[in-house]
Amino acid sequence: MAPEELKAPRLAAEDIKVWYQPDTIIASAARLEIPAGKVVGLLGGNGAGKTTLIKGISGILPGWQCGKFSVDAKLTSPADRAFKAQRYTVFADDRSFFTWSFRQFLDYLCGVYRVEPQEEFISSLVEGFHFAPHKDKQMRDLSSGNNKKARLICAFVLGRPLLILDEPVDFLDFVGTEFLYQCINAYSDQGHSVFLSSHIAESFTRCCDLLYVLKEGQLSGPFAVPREAKDVVQLLSEKPRSAVEYPRRYRRIFEP
Image 1: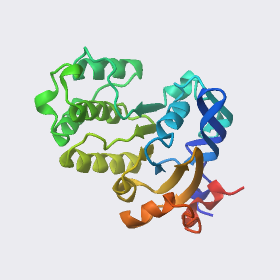
Image 2: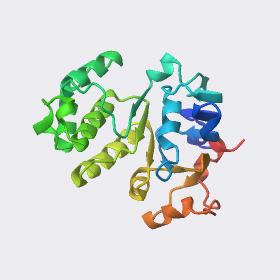
Image 3: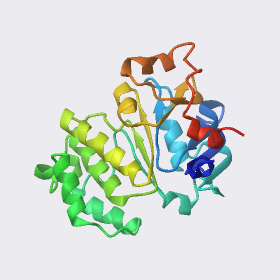
Image 4: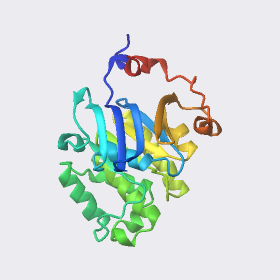
């Protein structure tokens, strides 16, 4: 058996429930696994609960419950500081630290995560996202698209083992979107894991290795990613093509 088949997932969680009010469960999942070095997609329509689920997994939502939560085969918790040091989350529309400049924000994050900023790499990201004209502005003066670019640049600079992206292409222009896809694929090629949500089919066909579907508060999957964007919507239909099987090399990870 190939080593990849036996490798523990980067993140494995069981019996997940997230809520804002205890009597109203927003999203639940029997099991979620994110393999090391892979990009895993979270598909769902508007209001499906994707952001709430991501907040729970990221450890910033008070209302959450998890029967089992492990990272690299070690039991932990979304609220554990050691886990938080290994993950970074970019939310769909984040306006925190709005009085800081991009560079102040980046330097702060590098200090918190104990990362030595690599100036050449930072410059390549700034250039790739066409962000240079805006890098000295305060975050509050950035458009929604440039605010997203600033936070994505920071995320890739930090280089955490698990990168969580909530609707990452929202607000981005065409050039920014194309460069983001390149960055995500390069990130996973380096052995990092990415968990990204979207309601845009192309985000999955361009980047993802596996796909989960969140519908009516229930998470199902993993599914193989359809080759064509038009087929992704089938997974949100009343009877998705559940027969689409995840790749053979993942069976040992996902099956008992």
